[in-house]
Length: 276
Image 1 (cartoon, rainbow, N blue to C red):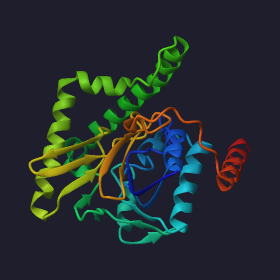
Image 2 (image 1 turned 90 degrees about the vertical axis):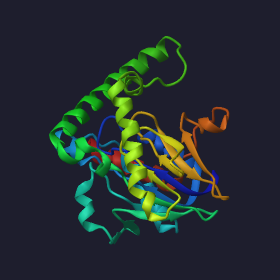
Image 3 (image 1 turned 180 degrees about the vertical axis):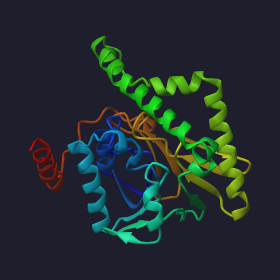
Image 4 (image 1 turned 135 degrees about the horizontal axis):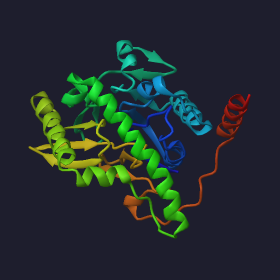
């Protein structure tokens, strides 16, 4: 396990078939932190209105986060548009997890970052929710198709994970334009706050970049790209693309992390409850 100062993850979409909970569990087992920020769309209430897919691994994600909070890790949950029902409870603490609609994180080197989900800067989500819901269904369909394409690629001996949704985003000009417009809107909104940058999610497009003198950080997602942000002990921020190992560090493929005793019990209980 590697010790870092803070972890930032967003767009996990628990409750959906596309949620890559197993990958997220490996990521959380690899990194231990003093802070854990859940930057919105952690539980997908939108999708769960249509159908619910809740696996043992997804249940273990919840238990692991709660256990970290109990053991002293400061866990802050900033709801997104898919779990917006929780926003009315901002300012309270449940299970030792602090719920905030927005907060500020100060890095080890003294930089101040606004933490927010970012859906308020998405004009479609904000003013045309029915279009956003249709887009969400279309995106989930691409993710569903991609699971079968991945199986075919493995059988053909093609290495690595290939993202159909990511390919579509890169190829569709309007989607790329939307991403840049979103980034500029977020930076413009926080520029007058006297901070050094912003950490957000929402668009499922991980990034760390400088825009107009501020640092823009997007956590990505755990449906399609499996990405998160870590703050090292010196304050340096790093984008991690999890491929069964921290790909950005060039580490060799690691053996699966051992499941700790608590997790093994929780997973067994979850499987039993789902089977009965």
